[in-house]
Structure formats: structure tokens, C-alpha cells
Image 1 (cartoon, rainbow, N blue to C red):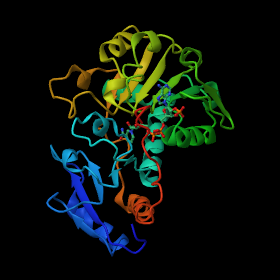
Image 2: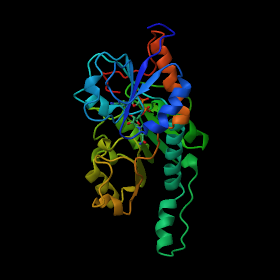
Image 3: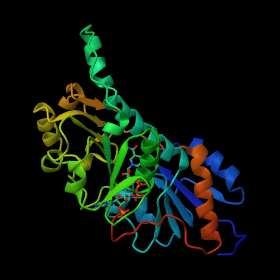
Image 4: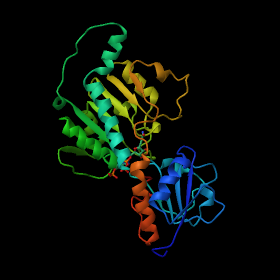
Length: 308
Ligand code: NAP
């Protein structure tokens, strides 16, 4: 493609608002044409939860740029055309938001705020034992973009931090593991930031949760498919786990009839741990559009073999 050539860019999402995004995209990429239908040839597709059938019409596009960090739904769509590269969106605003969510849940557990909220409902004045951050080890499942940012910020607060990844890693101040059981045995607060793949589905199961230290908390901000809900409830009800913070669920929105809503050991948020933030994401999207225009490989391409 010529370095100056204008490109046709499809914006297809049932969750992200085109009327909000497109004016910002047009400002960042003034020479390009943004469309919301596949009636004309498309060069690049910007996608998050696209309307049914959209992916099947994208044969031959040069790039599918996800508007989200997680791409498991795109990869599982039978209409996904073979041979089209997919890029994840690494949005600085979203990364910062995720670390804030990790810190707020870990601190809520560490400072006993979930217990004090329950005590307030009972008008009960009772101080709990104080721990130092250095008494606690936070274990992070997934030491990718999100896991490493959260690790840095937890270290800055004085927590011991351990991280689990598929391939061996080293990060200053972090105990890095590829042996899951070894990490779980030293973990007081477990934070899941893994992609959902065949290997990671159900990783938060009874056997693994049972390895955590007594009165640990579990924070799942990745995907609902990582958690075996009945196993979590068993570990909470037995008193082995102190509390769980769940942001993601197999079926979203979580149905009003779900028992999880009222379990005293569970704090629920509506898949809001980190949202794509157009103000910080647009520059990253524009960077990849320019790379395609120059005939260069886009950043952050999905590795189809590993599923993330
Ligand atoms: P990433 O950069 O691709 O990092 C993934 C990490 O997981 C890597 O460290 C990887 O190991 C590790 N991993 C993958 N498969 C593994 C396995 N089988 N065993 C052990 N470790 C494994 O991903 P990210 O950008 O940090 O995002 C992670 C996930 O967060 C996304 O996929 C998405 O589902 C979720 N998310 C949720 C929200 C929300 O609002 N709740 C928002 C954004 C993202 P290697 O380092 O060895 O590759």
C-alpha cells in the first residue's frame, strides 16, 4: 500500500458506540474513510463484539484491530476469515484502570474493608488484626501487559509479588513461576489476569484454590471461564478462602436470579475492571493503521497457535 494512500476502515461493534468513536478516529486519521457497513471494500476493521456475520465478510482485509485486550471471542467465531492478522489493543488508559482495580480489591481484602462493611450492617465495632503489606504475598496469574503493570504497582505499596506465566520470566522484585502449584502455596491474594484459552479455562478450580494460604482472597478480573464457581463457593463456605472479587462471568450480564449476588463472601462488579478508553486508545489504533499503510507488521498481533 502507498504510504500516502487513504484506507477504508470499518468500525463494527455492538458495545462500543460508533457515534462517539468515529469523530475521534477521523481527527486522528483525517485522510481515511470510516464506515459502519461492509457494503464497500474494507482495508482495516476495528472490531469489538461485531454484529453477527460481520467477520465472515472480512476476507482479504489487511488487519482486524480489536478494540479490546481479550480476543478469545473473535478467535472462537466460526466466521473468522483465515489468514487475516488480528491485533490486540494495548490501551494505556485501560492498563492503568486494570491496575487500579487490582489494587482496590487487594487493599479491600488486606485492610479488612469487606469485613467492616458487613460489621457496619450489624452496627458492630470490632477492630481486626493489622497486617503489613510485607506480610502478604499477591500471586498474579498471567504476567503479560496487565499482570506486569499491576505487579509494579503492588510492589510500590510494599506487597510481596509472585507471578505465573507460560514461559519463564524475570522481573525485578517479583518471584516468577511457571510451576502453578508452587506459586499458589505461597499466595495470600490471587489475582487472575490470564487470557482465556483451552489451557487456562477452569484454572481457578477447587484443587488450585485449595493450595492457597488460609484466608486468602481471589480476584478474577480476566474471564468468567477461568473460574469453577461451585468450587469457589465450597472454598468460601469452608472458611479456607476469606473473600472473592469477581468482575467477569460465564453469562454476562449476571442473571438477577444468580445466587452469587447474595453470597456474603463475594463482591461483584459488572465487567468494569478496565474499559477501553478512547482518549488513550485512539493513538494506539492510529499507530497500527499507519503501519499497515506503510506495509509494516502491525503491533501486538495475536499468536493463533497459543490463542492470545
Ligand atoms: P497478555 O499480555 O497476552 O499476557 C498474558 C499472560 O498470560 C502472559 O504472561 C502469558 O504467558 C500468560 N499465559 C497465557 N497462557 C498461559 C498458560 N497456559 N499458563 C500460564 N500462563 C499463561 O494479556 P493481557 O493484555 O495482560 O490481558 C490478559 C487478559 O485480561 C485478556 O486476555 C482479557 O481476557 C482480560 N481483560 C479483562 C478486562 C476486564 O475488564 N475484566 C479488561 C482487559 C483485559 P507468557 O508471558 O509466557 O506468554
